[in-house]
Structure formats: C-alpha cells, structure tokens
Image (cartoon, rainbow, N blue to C red; front, side):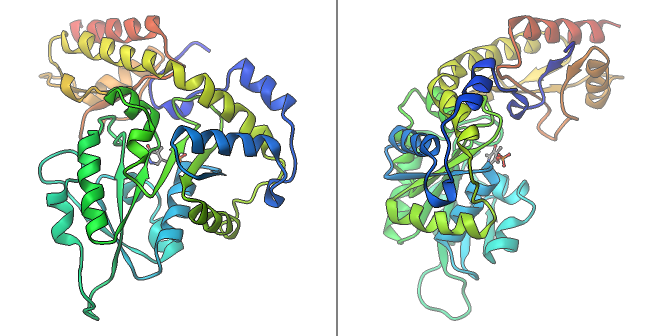
Length: 344
Ligand SMILES: *Cc1c(COP(=O)(O)O)cnc(C)c1O
C-alpha cells in the first residue's frame, strides 16, 4: 500500500478473518427479523452495554438520527454541545428528518456539557412560546478523543431525571471511552436512555452501528429505521464482521491508545511542535506547529509527500488518529518525518 493512514479510524479495512466471516455468515431477511447473525450481534451489543435491546443500523449518523426521531416529536428541543457530531457533522439531519430544534451550547467549564450548562436551559412549564425540552445528547468519547468522566455522566443523569428529560449517548467510540476511563462500558450506558456506537471505526468492521435502549424504545426505533430506508435484508454478511469487531476489535483498542501516547510524546519533544498531552486520552493526537516560516498546512502537505496521510489542519491542530491501520513503525515514521521537515 505504501502509505501511512492517520486521517481517521473510519479508514480501517476489514481483516482477513472478517472477510471470511462475511463469506460464511448465516443469513435471512432481517426486515422480517429472520437474520440469525444480526440477532447475535444485537444481543451481544445489548449485553455489553447492559441494555434491554439493540438495533443494527447502517451508520453512526443513522443511529443518532433514528434515536432523535424516536425520543422527540417535531418542534421539540434537544440540548447538546455545539461541537457535537449531531450539530456539526450530520448534514442538518435532526431538522431535516425529525423537525427538532438543536439548542447548541458551548460548554462553559469542560470540553463536555455539565449540569451548569444544561439545567438553566431546560425549559419548564407550559408556556406556549417555548419548545419543549425533550432530550440531552452527550458524547463519550467526545469527537476530539477526550472523555467525559463517569461521575459527570451520573450528575447529568440526575438532572435529566429531575426534569423528565431523556439522555441519548452518542457513543460512536464508547469502548475507547470506557477503556480510557478504566470502567466497563455499561458504567457509561447506565446513565443514558439510549446509546449509539460504531462498529466501523477503531473496532475495524467495514460498516455498521448499533443503537441500544429499552425494549419499547428499540421496537419504535425498528419502525423508524424502516421509514428511514435502513431496513436491510440479508445483512448478516455485515453483522458477521461486526461480531468480530466486538469480540476481537475491542480487545486491541488499548494498542491504539498506547500508540497515541507514544506519538504525542514523540511529537511534543520536537522543536516548534505543541501537543496538549492531557488531551490525549484515547486514539487521537492534536498537534500545533509554531514555526516562523512553515504553516500547519505546509506541514500536512509535506507529510503527504512522504505518504503520511492526515486531514488538513483544524482549529484544534493537526489531527492524527490511531487505528489498526497504524503500527509502531508508522508512529516512528511520522515523528522522524516531522523532525526531518522541521530541520530543513
Ligand atoms: C463518527 C461519529 C459519528 C457518526 O458515525 P458514521 O458511522 O460516520 O455515520 C457520530 N458521532 C460521533 C461522535 C462520531 O465520532
């Protein structure tokens, strides 16, 4: 292949074992509830998060939007961080598909929403002017790879309970978060009414996400999934690599976290490179360059010339994402490449 892939953990390609599992998968018509491999995947997901039921859907966006559509009626309001995926990266789907209003809040104290951000914004009473607050959406891990502590989630759950508002956890990387926080994944899901997570990121499956929740919620989500065009037929061929993602992919996430740390420490030691090491909590590293003549865009361009793939710089810096596509030698190669570029 000749290149080193640091753009995203969505770039992970299925392993040989996953391809074999796809070929061998036992299948049936899942819209009719007859795909045994999908059943196994949904049961495993629900068990891992200790929720009653789960639903296999095409993507993380799909899972979030399906959840929003089940939790909310058109015209209702969701409180969510301004930087959340549903606000910034889902093509306006919450308005488009569910007719809801996103109350996007910039967290005042932490990277994540705290009760101080949320509670004053929950609308109470029956004022005809007000949209009804229905849902809080949290992320863990956050899109920047940092995590929300368990106690912060518990506090938010208490606030939500008091006001009879539900919580959806966008847990696209919930297993990374659990690992970083050193807790079982169910310690995060227990503070939410519904949880979505991606099989197709660091877990390594080619496609797919799961939406988890109470039986009645998932029953309604199944109907909503069909309405959104997400009823898939012999989709056991995609659930099969998903099972491997949960069984085996999950076990190797720690390697990505360790390599993220190695990369962060290596880059931080270089002149003109700035890395907030405290913010390296899962599989992402953000690096800033403070150089008299070389911009972050220049650096990215030069890395590409050395076959190191990273996205154009963000306001938060140049992002490096660790995944099964990346080994120790790739981490060492990036550090050496940046060192070489800076020396010129
Ligand atoms: C990637 C991601 C999603 C969406 O997943 P897709 O499978 O790409 O649709 C949702 N939320 C967060 C926080 C993510 O990182």
